[in-house]
Length: 544
Ligand code: VG1
Ligand code: CO
Image (tube, rainbow, N blue to C red):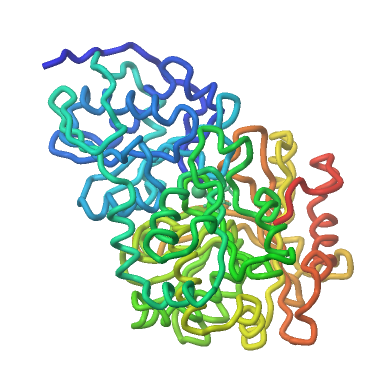
């Protein structure tokens, strides 16, 4: 048996997990001792690892493989009994969630900075998921953070790297390591949820699609499912090989970063359906020929049509959305007579609702949609649910969307991001807004009148835990809404997110450009918060 080495270390500032784990520049994460420090803090927070099983995988970004070997060694040195690792250290976030659940593992470590760019000069990240397969709840991330503050040593052992390139079983110290196919169990789960025959028939009848994996982890999943299993032509999956730097782009499925797909879908040779996913495979973007489906609308359409897929034929227990997500899904829930829950940003807040069977579908405006099949949002799942609905309804994406707006009204929606803003100024803006909250009611700005303004506070309906300061929301008398919050996933300065929403019941007005339909709210938001003044910017960096 190899000897365990105790390496002296000390607390490193800034190891506080954000919205989705810890994200830092790769240069920071790969500094000697940094990854080790955070890994040990995570193990310390879990407690005794003897008898436990953990899952490990990542999105394939630069440093993914090296970090995986370090974590395997440290897990063995910490007395973990079994580690189950995705082949080549790859696992999409939803596939990792599924594996944790199937194996009844005690948790898992996912190496990813999601949609943030990858490479030696870009971003790296690590998140810990718990036994239900979902992101660690706040109580657990707080425990990890507390451990980073008092850490004195980390444990490792001097063992050679193990071969992660094939499937197989190994031993590292006394720990059993299984390297598994990252796709097989995920594919098996998808088969149980969707009518693959109906999708296969639609595809063989000439329905065309393009899935852009953005050089990230969903490439192999999309090829296995869409091409090999469902019979789509091979060229239907683009950028399918995961690259350490994602081909130099941001693996972020939105109209800005997935420009190539956007162009294809608005051009003369557009296929019937287009989709993309992000670095770690939990996000999705949905497009029809000549039309982009906002994530908030997508959630609402899926909620209204989910019963058409076998996995949801019994109907939905309830739906949940993050607070900044548009209220389009609430309208569907009201129509179905089911509960619509409103949670803070971040998938971890859906976990209890899913576990308790209170919500079946969940979603976020940031291109995350998912269900109770795992405990993470799931990009490929969202694509398959859309395809299943299209196969049953035999309408175009545009017709389904229009039909939806006719029935429920249209929630015009946009998010404006101001990236790399000076942290002090961004904080000052939010603090100033918070201080003025009670006084805002009744105030007029750019021709709009504020009816209610507050700072979102969430009490978990299952465990009663309270999360304060989750975003300033301002509701106008005409039902429009603006939400302000600071990102918890950025790695440079602060990212200010401004979420804008305007409800339009009249089908005569459903053909506007969203930025024009939202113009009065955009002006009011700037006037009320002083965005230009605080950030020094005259326009957002990204509009989604
Ligand atoms: C962003 C999104 C949030 C999402 C989170 C993680 O967080 O707004 O909705 O849950 O990213 O997504 P923030 O704090 O930057 O706004 V992913 O695809 O990184 O796991
Ligand atoms: Co992601």
